[in-house]
Length: 357
Image 1: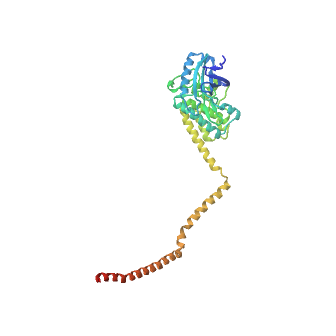
Image 2: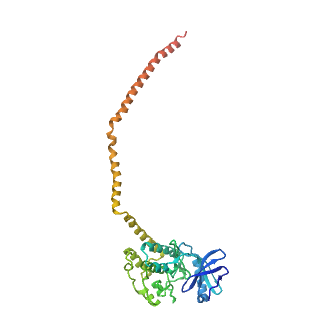
Image 3: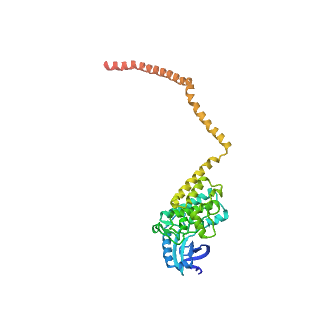
């Protein structure tokens, strides 16, 4: 079934952006709000399934409530001309999988900030009660200014509706990136998304996923049973501390990993900050450090010396004191003369009062 040029009498389909196992994504124009959007049109066999339509609407409503800088916003969803579709924020740029294919392995300095953003978006969804279930680099869009946005929460499920004992014959997620419990058909949890983030981080730093096989069944067995090759063997720039984080995230048991993406994000942020601090201290070349130490020491020596200066100037201090003594003597004589000159006058006045004429 071909996609109509206009969906819901509102979204004008312009050009394809990509396709996946479940849907085709198009760049479109919202004629009502006059903006560009991304429209994901589900395959005809999914659209025709009544049970899937109900589940899809529930999940789309839950995804539409997510509002975070690192999550692609869901604007609308609907059913038109026999096809289910979901309308999302249009994000310019490319996805992380394409970047890995074009650029190869990333350095830890470039990879960690991207993974921290992915953890921030998924951590927000976990706090809202949603599990992505299909975390992979294809679903991480990178803008030209290196902002990462997680997309495709269309198959996410509310945690409240998931019971630990629930089993499902349908394997959620992509075989290269799903967790051991997903590979076993068990219900996914936030720890499942954390495992998938570990697979993405492994591929981002080494240029390849930890497990590669020709069939989904073989991949599922590898995720459940096989330990991954230490990533530092594929990228020497990976430090032992970073390797320990990656291998912890790829633990087979969910309880051995970080429970949520928020926890993993905090660990990666702490690691990134710790790596930046030594780099700052090592940037000045050694020859420049010695003159800097001498320049700092010189003022300290000059500050301690002036403590004896007040004791070296006793004689100049006596001259003002001597001058002040002569002035006092002179003023005293003047006062005495003045008082002495007034005595005859006062005697005359008193005499006049006692012997009036």
